[in-house]
Image 1 (cartoon, helix red, strand yellow):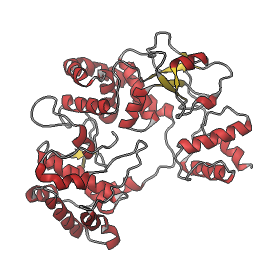
Image 2 (cartoon, rainbow, N blue to C red):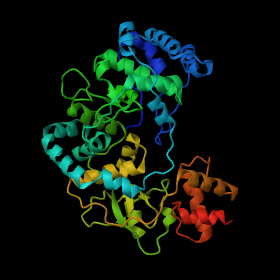
Image 3 (cartoon, one colour):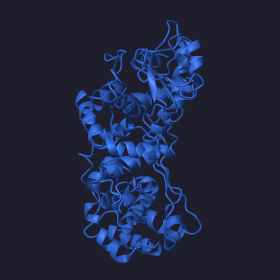
Image 4 (cartoon, one colour):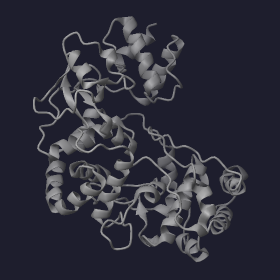
Length: 429
C-alpha cells in the first residue's frame, strides 16, 4: 500500500472539501498522522471525531457526517446511496487493534514475495502488457519491471484486490477505530471519488483498511496520483491494468524515481568490516564504499555512477546478505515504508529481468524476537541508559542505535540487529 498523500480538489464548488481533507498523510513507517483541525473545519471535526467520547450511536454519527459531507459539496443522494445498509464491521475493528506477537523473518517474507511462480507469472504479464508499459515508461520514466513487481506484491497481479466494502471499513474506523480523524479524511476522500464518477458504491471494494484496486491505493493517494491511462474517462484501478500501473508509476515519479538508476544491489563485505557503517542515516558515495572494500556480489550488476550515494543495508544483521541501496530504494519506501517490502520489490523486478536472486545465505537458524521480547529489549536498553526510545516493540532508528551501542560495549559486530543472544545479555545485567 502506498504512503498517503492528499490531492487538492478539482472542482471550485467543493473548496470547503479541500479544507476537510488537507493535512492527511501517512508517514513512511505507516504511522498514520491525525488530521489537525483548521478554523474552517474545526466544528465539523469535533462533531464527527468526538463520537466515541460522546457515545453517539452509529446512526447519530452518520447523520452528523452526512451534514458535514453535504456542507463540503457531496451530493445528498450519493451519500445516502453509499451508506445504504452500512453498519460497523467488527472484523475491521479487530484487524485495526490487533498487534501480532510474531512477525515473519525477512527471508520467509522474500521466499513468498519473490517466488519462482510469481516471477514466471510476472514475466508473462510483462510480455502481455509490453505496449502499455512502454508508453507508461515514456510518460513517467519508471521501469516496467518495477511496476509489475508492485502489481504482483500488492494484489497478486490484480487477482486479490480485497472483498471488503471500502465505505463500511472506513466508516467503522472513523466511528470507533484508532486515529478517527485520519479515517474520517479517507472516508470523505472516498465520497469525492464516487462523486467524480470513477466507480459505483457497489463496486467499491478493497482491503479491511480501505486500500483499493490493483495497486492498493488509499483514497487520498488515489485523489493525488490515480490517472486515466486507457482513456475511457475513468480512473479505474479495479479493472484496468493500464490505469493501475500508470497510477503506480505516477506515484513513484512524484516520489523521486530516477530512470535508469538501480534500486540497489547485493554486495560482498571485506573481512574485518566495520558493521556500524550499516546505518540508514549513513550515506556514502559508491566510490567511498568501494574504497572500504565493498564489492558487488555479481560482476555485471548495474551499480550507478561512482558519485552516486548509497546506504548499506543488512536486513538480517551481519550474518545475512548485504546490500547497497540507492535513491530508488527510498522511492519504493515512500510507497510502503518497509525495508522488507522495498527489498522484495527490487529483487522481484531483478528476477523479471532474469536476475539470479540473493546469493548470500540467510541465518535461517536464528529465531526472531517476538513483540513482547522486543518491548522487553527496549525497556532493558533504557534501563542501561542507552535511549532506545519508546518501548513499543518497533525496532526503529533509535532502538538500532541503542543496540549498536550495546554491541560495541560487548565487542560484538555492531550491526544494530537485535537477536535472542543480545536480549539474554541484557537480562543478565
